[in-house]
Each structure stands twice: as structure tokens, then as C-alpha cells.
Image: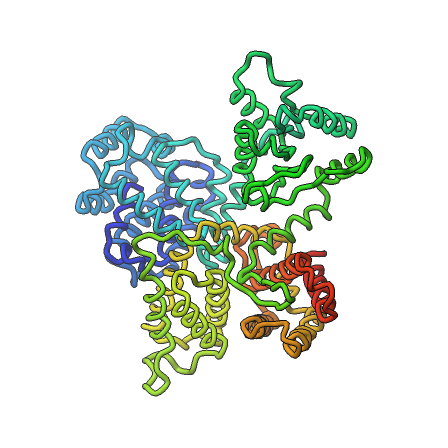
Length: 630
């Protein structure tokens, strides 16, 4: 366990050549012996032996020497735990090879080793030893801590939910108490799950964590009423509407204690309340206290998935850019009865309301974003919010490096093919890589990162098909692996890219809908629809090319969907929060783009007078409804 951070000092890993497969292997080889030492139930039922047998199926011959040594040290402990039920004598004996490697690498401090020896000779049980902080009361040596911090950063940029293992290892460092059923379930996942690789394994472990975690206590109060004291009369009326409807409300005029500290009372109210109703007005915008309440509510639910922040406009106000991004209800110039109904509709959580929120989210995250000129011409541009980039020293060179890797993968048609590459690349792979290269060369750091994510996802999915095994030579395969790793690194520089991924994962859209006869019928209309716009000059060439490419990508993916796939095991697909697959990614992109077209068309007056745009609106509505309605 103490050896783990040492692999980060390996030059191969420092160059991001340690595969996700090997990282998962390392963690698995550590988790099995630890669970065998800690839990008698795991030792007694043969689960440890089964885990070791499964682990032994993996070939790590291609990993670096230092990484392989770490794995070997862990597997030695696994076999010891499986064969000897982790008896003190056998653990001490079989640890010798691990200790020898650790000394050679400088991973162990002599003080920690002496403490281990003292405890073992004193007769401490393996369960109690496994429960102690990894470095006893001395803490991890600074040199190892630096390696560990570097290692976890290299994992997090890969966007594969490695946090489930990082948290596990840091809990062992601290000696935290553990959930026995969770930890046994973690290492006892079926072989079919482990075979799927880190993305599926880590998603399954996240599901297990949520399954075994105690349910959070329910909020004591439904709503925190956030308002300016200058608007207290309106706040009292809204409070009365909510209370009459059966909701509980925390409000300053009633619940703040006289003479109390405002910040303390505000935090108390926010902790007790499920959601926050913000009464927007010029006074609210100008109030520091109100903005503090708004910011606290927004920070607790930045994606809007829980709809924790419910803004209601009570007077026209110049809202901040952040506030304008959130859909609000307006009771300005409304009668008392109309206002009452609007308020109750705004706070109600029903499928129709939730669908409206998701529709807005996928529209906002769509990239590229459609745009409609004042004279009704449909164009598109990069998403100015989600594709905003944070530049640092390593980022500027990435687009050029990615282009070089693409050229290595594509090769030169006039040259002999590399050894091991027995056929030409599928057209969709070649086309996507060429399109990615064009985007990176032309746009550099302003490239559409969502578009590139889709292009890579489709190309990688195509190459993963068993029919295409062996198409890439060894060097090409390595270039593809580096291309994917570099793209994940590039994505980490886009602050809202993770939020877009969360939107895709949380949307109810089923990627399988791409392959239905109904959708094929809907999509067949698109080319004719855009051609009609093109005849009268109401669509840009960029949109025509982009939509043609989108239809080709969907056609390629749906052809693969028609083939039989190996059945999922262990848990039903609907119960597993797996990362979004390529089908779902494309389906959300499709629905989001047309949802954004609908939103933009409603904001351009010229659209209403153009008959061609009525057909566009009807088509866009059909696409969005098809994907969002069950």
C-alpha cells in the first residue's frame, strides 16, 4: 500500500504513458489483500482467492519496470491473504519481497517499518493492523506525498471518475473507519465488469458507494425566502401563498432572531431548507446580503439539476449575467390570482417542469451554438460559455501536438502500411480525424472542444469494433492512445466542459432512439428542409456542412447499434450510472442543437414573417420532443 505513489516517479508515467488499464490494475491489486486482511468474511468465503485468480488474468508485461514492481508487491500480498487468511506470521514472511523493493525505492521510512515490526511481534491482528493509518502517526513522507499528489492529478484529468479510488487510498492513509459491505463489494465485482475497463468499473463503484451510503437527513424546511428588506411586503404575500399551499418557509421577517448575526442566521436557514426562492428586483440586485444568499444557493447546485434556486421576478431589474442564465418566473404586472398560480407553478417539481429545465440545459450546452441573424439567416459559432478556455503554459502547444499525432495515425497513402496494419481505416475514422485536424489547425485554442470530443468518441468507438481489430499498427495505436490522453488534458482547461458532461449524463435522453425507424423518418426530412433554406439564402454553408457531418456520424453509429452486443451483467443498465456512451452523446447533441435553434428563433422578429422558418420550427420541435418525451 505504501509503495503506490512510487510509480509516479517512473518516466513513462510522467509522460502520461501509464494506461488507465494499468492504473486500475494497481488499485485492484491493493484493494484485494487489504480487504482480505481487514474482513474475516472476505477471507473465509474464498472471495480473496477468486479475486487473485481474476487479477492474474491480466498481462502487465508491457508496463514499466517500476510500475510492474508495484503490482508484483501488491499481488504477493494478495496471494498471502488468499492462502493463509492473513495470519500474522505469513503476512510478515510474504511481505519480505515487498519490503525489499520498498527499501530500494526509498518508499518506506525506517520508523514506519520498525512500528510495523513492533506491532506484529506484539501479536496485533491483521484486521487491526489494516485499520491503522498507513504511516501510523507520522504522516506520509514529503517526497512520497509529492508523488501521490502528482499521481492523483494525472488521474483526474482523464475524466474517468478516478475519485472513487483516490478517496479509497486517502482513507487508508488516514485510517478512516470503513463500510465492510461496500469494500467487499468493491473488490468482488464480477470479472465481466472488470473486463469493461476503468470507465465502467469506476462508474459501478460509484453506484455501490451511493447504494451503501446512508441516506442524507431530509431538510426540515421546504423553502428559504431570499429578498430585500425593501420588498418585505411582497415577501410576506409570497410567504402566505406558499404556506397556504402546504409548504414550510424560512423567512427573515419571522425566523431571524432579534440581535442575531445576519450571516449566522442566513447559513442556518440555508442548511435547513431544501430550496431557495429569490425575489428579484433592483433592491435585491443592489443588496450585498441578498447576493450572498443567491451565491450560496447557486454554489450548492451550479448545474441546476436539483432546481435548488427558484428566482421570481417581482420588479423589472438589470440582472447580472449569472442571474440571466437561470430561468425565472415573473409576476410583474400580474393580478393577485395570476401571481399565485405563477408562484405555485414555479416551485412545483413535476415531470413537465423538469423536462423544461433539461431542455434549457442541453440547449445551453450545445456546441457549436446556432445563431440567427436579424434577417433570418441560420448560422452557427462556438459556444462562448462552455468553450471558454483557461490558458496555462502547457496548453498552447497541445493543438499542434494533436495535429502531429493525427498525421501519424492517418499515415501517407503512398507509403507502405505499417507492420500489423492490414487494411485501410474506416471512412468515418479517417473523416473524423481529418475534421479534427482541420478544426485544430484553423482555430487553435478557440477550437470547438465539444465537437472534437464527439469526433474522437465516434472514431474510437468504430475502432473498438471487433471487425476492425488490427487496423492500426503498433505505432499508430500508441499515437491514438496519446491523442485521447492529450484531448482529456486539453478538456481539463475548459472550466465548464465537466458541467457539459454532467448534463449529458443526467439527461433522460436514450441514445438507442437514434436507431429507431421513427427517428430515421424524422431525420430524412432534415436535408430537404435545409436545402429549402439554402435556396433562399437563409442558411450558411458552415451549417450545411456541419449538419451533413452530424447525419453521417449518426448513420455510422446506428449501423453498429444494429449488430448484437454482448449483454450487460451484474446490474441492469438502467441501474448503472455509467459514463455517457457515444450514442447518448450524439443524441443529446442532436436534441440540444435543435432546442437552441428553437430558443434563438423566438428572439428574432424576422423569423415570424418567413414561411420557411415555420417549417424549421416545426421540425426542431419534433426532434426535441422525440428525444425528451418518454
